[in-house]
Image (cartoon, rainbow, N blue to C red; front, side, top):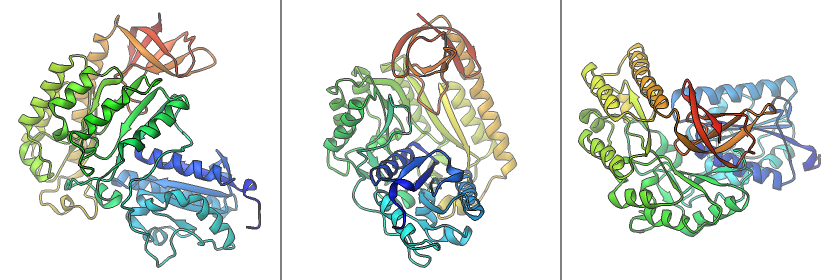
Length: 454
């Protein structure tokens, strides 16, 4: 290389879901360990790495916009090299270079841990770059059969909480989903590797671990571990210093009585579950290739609340799936009114290329999708606001996330996952980020709770 590594600055743009966050943190650690300098000035860095998302059309559009911006900075002379990584790279491969000219390297998910070497290569290859990653006519390497080792990360979350990925890929073949094609088949991390990563994070000051995967409830099936997720969760009880363990992305059919009992009896697993349902109409679920039925989903919610009356439930739904009638949408609305989820995310259906749902008859007009999304989220807002008012005067144990110079803090009680849910706004906060404090709810501010330290 013509320049010393420490003189080369690397700007990093991380887009997408928590799984992408973990990949970004691993790449950042590799970059720093190789001797490069990380900079927050992504518009004025020697190298800009864009870790993309490509799950649905809006995510792809956001990723392409970020790449174009980096390339524009390169054309102006403020940036020298542009590297594109992540799910959109894996999905489009070298087609990305046809969409956007000026990319120096496109790297696949299996090349994540080689990011530093790829940066070094593109600087060694002269002004045209393309010394690492993919060549214009060369496909990306296939997804590795091994599960990624996510130890040794440079956290971009606050230092007191982190994501813990327990598996990669997915074996489900939901008709609307691109994840299996992007991330590959389902692979569980060995229990000892998961626990080693958890211990590493807790030893570094993390008190809250948010367990993530494409399909959390299938953990261990490929390793022939009976009740794999339950077996893994019981091991966390022995990790000193870990206060909260939160479960995300629980495929509903994998939640059985033993798992519910394990969560209910745990001292560390918070009573918060993220269970994406997608829909409740039996015909739509079948068309989605989901094994659930409305009756099964209703019984699951009833079982969870019977075992844990204080449980907080989050879900994700899709409106405007091909063939969805007004009556089927009203059935979904009625279910949401009955279930009274604490938090709910909703997406319009996007006909993603390569998915079977994109070819289904009965595609719903976009204006109808938007109308249904607005109606559903309006109903959910009323539910969430009413539940917030019911919490006024209650006491909550809050984990402080940040405190500004004026003493206004932001934190979360167990029923609020980081980044996606509401927060607790703490007036006159005397605690530091990462500390737990007792609070009393004194009011509400839209989706957020106003609390005071007691």
